[in-house]
Amino acid sequence: MDARKTLEQWIAELSEKDLPLLRQSGKDLKMLGSFETISMAKFSNIALTDPGLTLTILRAACTMPRSRLQDEIHTVDAATMKLGTGKVGEIIDSMEVLENCLEGEAKTLYMQLVSRAYHSAYQAYGMARERVDMVPEELFTAAMLHDIGALILLLYGDGILLTLSSLDDEDAQKESLGFTLRELSYALAKHWKLSSFILQSLEAYDGESPISSRLYEIHLANDLSVTAQQGWETPEMEALVEKIAQHLHCDPEDAMEEVRDNAIHSAEETVFYGVVPAAASLPDLDEELLDSFLINAKIPNKPLPQRRGQVEIPNTSIPTRQAKAQIPPATLAPDYSMSPMNHNIIVEVIRDCKAHLASGFNLAEFMKLLKRGFVDGLKLNRVFFAMLEPERRNLVNRFNFGNETGIRNLRIPVKDHNLFQRLLDTPQALLCNDNNSQKVIPLLPKEFYKFIDTNEFFVMTIRSKGKPLGVVYADRYGNDYGLDKADHEKLSQLCLLLAKGFELIGR
Image (cartoon, rainbow, N blue to C red):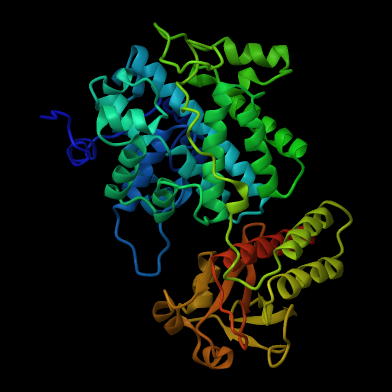
């Protein structure tokens, strides 16, 4: 008879447990002073190096009630705003400190996993930034929480993980535990009501099914952080960098340079982890930089288990995944089959807009580039940018990118908590379709809804220097296509570029 605990039994036992605070996080927060005066950016910078702090804040915020139209909690910033600084301070004061909870080999392995997670999160964030993702912090947060199942078992699993030959071989996990660590992470995240995006990032990926760019980047980043443990000059790493280059539409040399920079920066920011980061084995690494990575690294009492053939840093690297583990092919990254968009034109427009932003900026030329993206790339029929009047009572159409019929002098009232007032108060990108139209349509001004005559459209807040400028509206009214997730992603990227343009002209 199998005496092992089932996954359900582990969830019942572990779901009431917490990941502890890193001692360094506590010290850094105290140096910043009162929670009432700490800036959101400084708090997040500390929290996102600490999976225990990140998870605890998210869990507390996700258990709070929210309205039907309120966004899910994806990031530490959003969770902190939801909870309030007073509550956040109370939560942190009640947290245990890791160094008081764990010691020896288990503590070293815990910190090695944390170091790998931060490296993965940094790489995912970097790819999202290159793709002009509107909220790359969501990818960072999801990637940072990838190994919560393993971390919590190291704390409360009575040494069960120390018997595994590899923490990345799912067959070995299944044989020893009866389930995989990914399944444990997913089940815990679901029990804690973490965001749907975090849950999706923890789902099994078969390497064949179409997947969104954002989730694909988390898979790429995780594979990169694990592969780096075997060495940076391996066929596996070369193939992975080629996939990253294909995904970002750049040369492999440029992709490797970006990956290398991200690895170094992530290591520099987390020297206090006390373990040797993956960046330490980068070829041609500056000697002084390497010394800074090694000087504070603590050596475990005995070597961690490794597979045969692994690059030997026997007392500093996490056991790596078996060679049979699949890396998702870049050709399967986003699926654009449901959208009529011309993907090549969109890629060109995004590249050209970035170049224009970095050189002598001309608003008229910049708007021509964006129009090509909206009309020739995304095949949109109606697109306009309505800007907020000084008295904030109306949005007035200022820039048309698509069909101008009837919209040149359009004015949209901003009042009574309608959709546009909510967009200006709480910036977001919203795709209205069959899934949510019953909730969204009643929020539209009646005359505006009568005018657009469609239940499928995209709207996004445009901000400059932290202040709302207006809203972009887009649809495909009059053709046989609606709008899908791929359209939503590219629309968000173009709108973010539009916002960057207005920041340059000081609006």
